[in-house]
Length: 533
Image: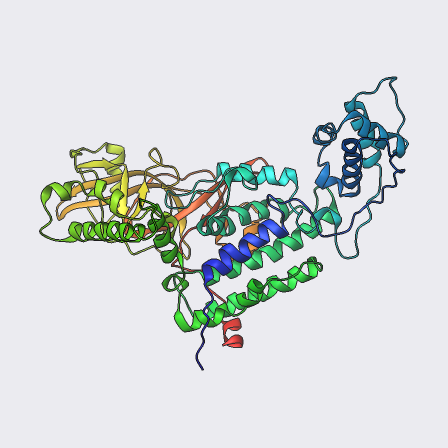
């Protein structure tokens, strides 16, 4: 039997399920709902002599009053500002029909808005059976929660190869997001932000909404876990089974929490993606990111816009760039061209997001060749005590270290590039550290490169429960923000970068460490793999 259709993970997961979940279901940048009102507001008939603008304003205010207060009026100040957008006649009519008492002889729009809000906050909302009205389909994330997400996006530290995301996510200003941006948002920024807000929120605010948000969080993390399992750069027999299990849990939870939501063909096709993982291996070998980058490169090529001629112009420009790249790799490349490699690379190489760069084994070290070896300070030289090598006396400081096209920097140079996970001897899991110095030192056997790092302290206090331990596929963990003493490590001990988000809990400064290692994946449950394969 020949299978004629292959499901592309990029379109199915990132541009399909991830975007659909966070926009249509959770309501990022989306207004509207598919559920019933939570309050019945009875207003008298509007006189025919009332202008159309006033009548439309009355109808809109009535709709807002019937929606959950947490959505339309998350705070009194914001509610007053929203109601003051309507004209005085609309507010006066609604206030009179609601039976609000006028305290002033000539109330202003602000006075009417305050009276309407007083009436609204006294009403008891009627929830649909099995559905908490404050988390309506398409309006789960409140205005305050969206502000918290914006703050997390602003504060999180990521390496330079991670695709940038809009700081005001959900607003129309940033336009259409690319697949790589949805990948970063769906596997780093948004899961961490939602866990912070919803995991332990039972004791804060509305208990019913908190319980429902926790259920929505678990459903969301099933989707995130499935995406991470499917897009890992290393694949075991357990990955397809874990992917299918989490995707099935996600779809089941979606229908239980939002019965009115209609599934799309993408949801059905996602259940078959594990078949292609078994047939073809990791998705990085057969997804369509390279084709999309090629299309983008062709679209950016200048042409005359004339049909019949632009095809030849684009083909000629592409051939020239390919020949230029080949010239740079030849041993007989002219010296003047070789020294201009950085300039030619910008012209010849297609521009694409660096977050698609793979985590590779470290092989090459590139530093700053114009630095001069100098005597090392005593406090730096003594750090080599205990290593197999003798303490060096001279060396040079590097601000960046390039290992297989992945840049690592000192904290003073680039804070995101300085956050790395290292493998210590005898340690079961990598430890997050901050790169303080990059040294190239003079040794008897030749120059050697070392990193001076400061590890973050492990969180040992039992009062700080780690909510990220419930979602192992996210590979996130709480650590103490306090740093240990400096130590020296080899570049080969570096596992990967990590994203770092500061967090204050119970008066203590912590950090959330999210591993960005796409190769060394978390151990998967072989029990589910045996049951599925």
